[in-house]
Length: 318
Image 1 (cartoon, one colour):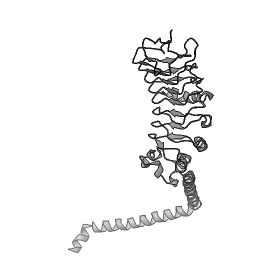
Image 2 (cartoon, one colour):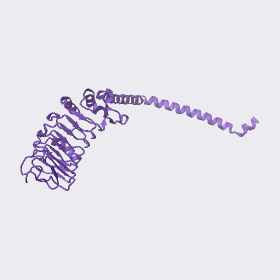
Image 3 (tube, one colour):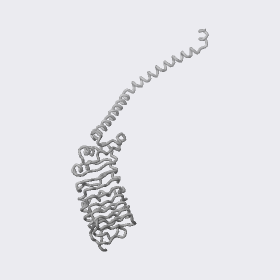
Image 4 (cartoon, one colour):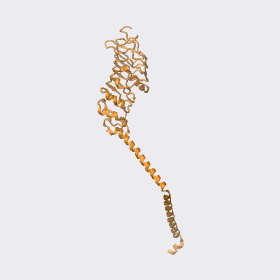
């Protein structure tokens, strides 16, 4: 292919270095992407799998710095899919349906600064993401966006292997941030974490994260974070919680106090039963006396009833 050649399904603008392949029927990355391409936009196609070396042209590395692959229905990313793009700065994989992500999916992206994967991850891919992001290839990553993926935790094995400045986790399923992640956030103070629209569970497990929010400015949308549970605090802002609301010590003490109360009541019950057992003879005599007294009283009532019902007594009264 000549330098001016352009894939038939694409529009090439050499002046801006942009190649756009939009709303086509392509099932794989078009062959013959020009070497001068700095921005490649593949959008609205039907590329189900990003295969190994999908962006290499006759083994030649491309000068591409921006790659947009949103809305392509991508379901799988194979190992070394982005080999041949050593200068890539921005990769957008948003709005796909990723089911499988290889642990070496992002291998070779040494210069990648921004990775967008919003509304793209199915449940299996969400689990695999931690391994895929754990590669040393992403050590220069500055921006990572993972909004709308039903993630339940931060999918990064270690925060200190990245050069992250922005981590977007809005609209996921995160109920709490664990102590290990909180400790890492304290150490990586340059990071800004966005967490709006997550169903936080405002209980003892939230303690470390709660104090991180109070003592740090690393969460720009902290004022918009709301409790989802318990029911009594649904919709309540995390920032307005009191320390005792998430105090593990108080919660543990309360649980211990209930246990202690139960033990005391059980001991009282045992003592009461023992007293009854030891005094069973006296109690039996007492019950017999009460029964005899009741029997005597009933005989008196019976005698009076028979007298009142005698007709001869009635004539005498007349």
